[in-house]
Image 1: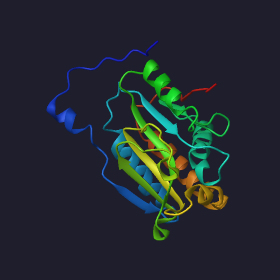
Image 2: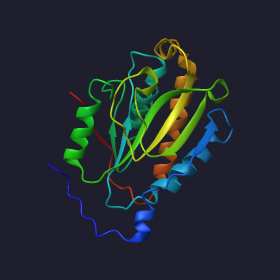
Image 3: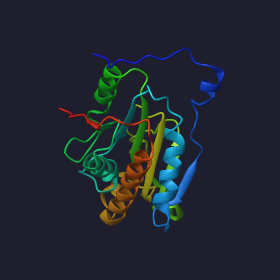
Image 4: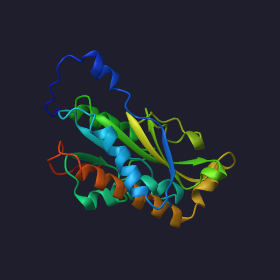
Length: 211
């Protein structure tokens, strides 16, 4: 059953808003990171029509340190009880390679034209490790370890947790938990600050249990 959703015919101006995300990249250790990242999220979310459901999908698994960024963010977001957000992916109920397709199908069965924000870990250059990126369009989970998974998100937030290019699966397994925890706290807190500043969001967070 789909949740009710009504939308008027899109104008040319609304069509331009489909791509609202300018690339953004910043080290998670910057002194004003919460302010900068939350401001970026506000600038994006305030352009989403009030009748369009916002879904956050935190992709990853707690079975791999580097890949646990998403579930850690989801778990912290759940504790914040954010208004008007539908949340998928926590440490207890992760969204990972085995259930990602089913999760996306369930979302599109229950919501019409949702605005999906994907949160995931990624690998990158040595100088970029520790950076948080915000970008337009979907993230491709599993690409770094040669997994063929569906793309996720109208926009994405990724954390570069380690160096890519060689033995990626091994690298993710041996990523320091400290950096992953720190980045997850920054991302979750930034969401909390951003959403608290959005008047369009008034309903409590909906948390989806994944069987």
